[in-house]
Length: 481
Image 1 (cartoon, rainbow, N blue to C red):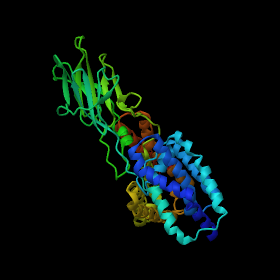
Image 2: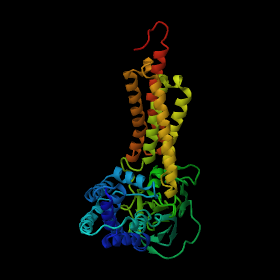
Image 3: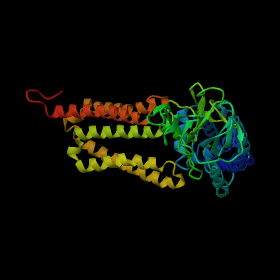
């Protein structure tokens, strides 16, 4: 990009329409979203962002304006229509400011804003270019609008539940109180304060042998029919960690969400039927669970217009979603498997110091990079340090590997192919249980960890055993081919 074209790009960025989009983005993210959260203010940010992003992208990447517009539209479409696109955008944006991008195809309604960006570019292309010193005024404002967003507020949280006559009332932080007089089918606003402390256990009125209790930290309710001597599980949803990730607040300037888990319960007797009762459980940001008179349990989430509905309950599955941390772990496990294979092939024996230090740097660098994500602008330096550690480690491992190439049988093509295959199997074996966990099976996160460890270790044990047997054949056996 020439000096003149840079001047035209600055003129595009400083065009009144673009600067109006910058002002709208700042006003919407820092004020309007807090006053009127909802789809309208969300779409306003998309419209303003798509108008402002192409000139900023063209200036930062020094690419032609048409390419900047096309790139902006393509990336926006990918991150709004695919889970992997949204998670990738969240990861990249979090290098600069903690962010969370959610896939929502309805946001594509904002794409015509790219046409407005095109028109402003065509208009500025016919004007004299802006001098580069003016960038001191234009670029920082646009960058601040693109990265500085309003603090994300935590989701509402159900914290207590009580019986008030014919009504069951659920109280929550950020949600007020809601009452139901029809067994949890419908809910209306309740303005009264809680009468007492949260109840972790309660019995059916008139039948003190039939009781219920919550298990703190879990989405679980136990039931006893003998006055608490023995308990059985009445309701259980082993997806606390999954739901916690969905409610996680990515913005350190905002408040953290309450952890998901049963917080309190209440038992209401239904008049006119012997032993008939309902149970309502407050489950933090996940909403509530309701047991009706037939014994059927339902999970209800916070409805956008108030109250609780089954349709508003957070989804319990999203195949491939919310496992970014596990993808990192699988990649590091695969890298470790590859280094083990290279080391057993002779690198460690030939250059033990260089190979060991290089391997440590190569494995530690990505961990440092991962820690930098979500730490805001201060994390950029940590990201750079981690990247340099990984680069230095890679160079040292490559140097150690090159020193043994062609000098031992361990560097033959078949051996290198097995190393790559084991690394691939390790990556797949580590990630597969978590992919299943995101799809609903296994439901407990702990079981997914155990399966991942087994599947990750198995190919490495096979590789090491094969190479040990090849290098030290049993008596009467020739060298393994």
